[in-house]
Length: 134
Image (cartoon, rainbow, N blue to C red):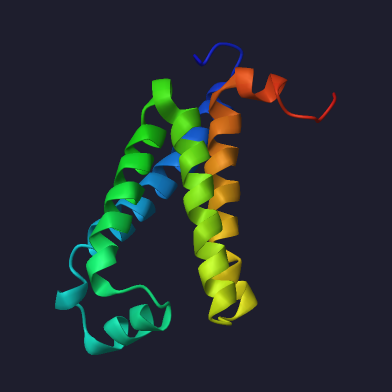
């Protein structure tokens, strides 16, 4: 999926959106390895989600690998698909513990929209697969 038939504005907007998503998710993935070093308030918030601390490095690994797949053009669609599943799990987790809708439950959805918007702007072939008509 090259950048043919993509304006420079679309390409750079897509790169910026994708870059922001990559930075955020890599940061989040790495943090999952250091939960024991976080402030007690952050540890308490994490405990509310119901995942044992020993599971978090595995979730971090899945998140980092999926994000790296998304970061490289050849595997970006695979990475986006895996991240969509991961973010869906995050939504389900926040629903299960009755977190606030706008700030917690929908945040992974917002991230997923930005993630796919970045790909949509960068890859014209992806546009051929979308249901919107000109």
